[in-house]
Image 1 (cartoon, rainbow, N blue to C red):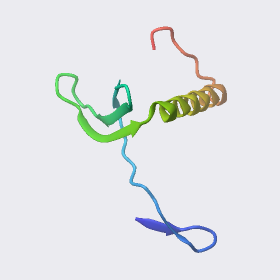
Image 2: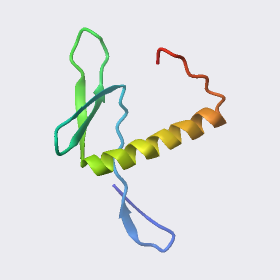
Image 3: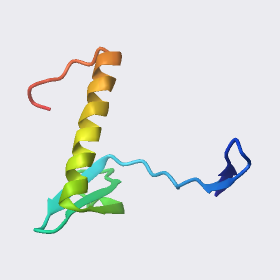
Length: 84
């Protein structure tokens, strides 16, 4: 799937997937982030995407995500719960 920007240049628009199941792991050299769908707790989740990050990029991503979540909470009067 493609589209054009304001200058008429073609660019690729990535395919999007919804995820309600997440698995994370790490080795000495990389972080693994798996995303998928789980419909029944008794069944296996269907993993559709794996992202592999270097430790440095995992730290950058973690900070970016934490900042974005904080912005969301402030704009939406989101109250966190201790057990989340």
